[in-house]
Amino acid sequence: MKLRYVSPLLLSLVACGEKELTVNQLCEEKPGLCSDLNDDSHCKLERRDVIVGRYDEQKMPSDKNKYKLLIGFEKYSKCIELASGIEHIKLKEKKTTRVNGYLTSLSEIKRLNDETITSDEPGLLHYHWSRNQSESHLQKFLLAEQAKQLETPELQLALASYYMKRNSLKTIDILHHALTLYPADAQVDPEIYTALTTIYYKQRNYKLSYHWALLAENAGVQRIEFKQMKAELDKQNIDTDLIENAADETIESIQAGQFKQPNL
Image (cartoon, rainbow, N blue to C red):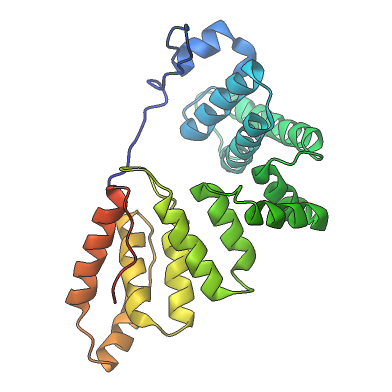
């Protein structure tokens, strides 16, 4: 699958009538976006997303931008928490900036959590249900589903996480629908593939489980247990070559932004 990588140093922020800014330029022009984060090479992508998210929230403090920043800080927090325990041999102050970055992430997550508690933005509704176990937010999130307000891959995946243990058939439909919402050459969240692999395996539909496992592997997922799947397929005298060909076709349809369910 074609995965697009954007260098943190080359990421451009473009708005109408504004010049392009790299992350380095943002840190120079708006040091407050970066000064309380780590200043070494750890968690580059997560740090980049936080800086961009802060920039967007400053320009327009909408609920959508707050949600984007909240998720960004969560990912950064997990990454920098691990990195903050690494002793830097030559420059011990590097460790201090990682600790500062981690403390900043905790503070910002709390701030954004508190500021968005009354929001009806669908992503935030799911956030407050999944993180804070808020049933009132869950009910609003499910109402947003009925109102067709969850028509993004990210929100469909969030919806699938709710139905995963409740209705496997509906979960499959939701995950398939999520794939139809990606434009051509987009980077697909591999969690969709792993979820479908798991569901079909539990249903003992080893053909489709193997199919989606191949897509997960192609997307970079590791530690997939192919051996057991292939053993089950061998018992049923099923030709894995046919499944592998179907997987290639599915990959091509997703890359073209025209996902079609596999005919297996």
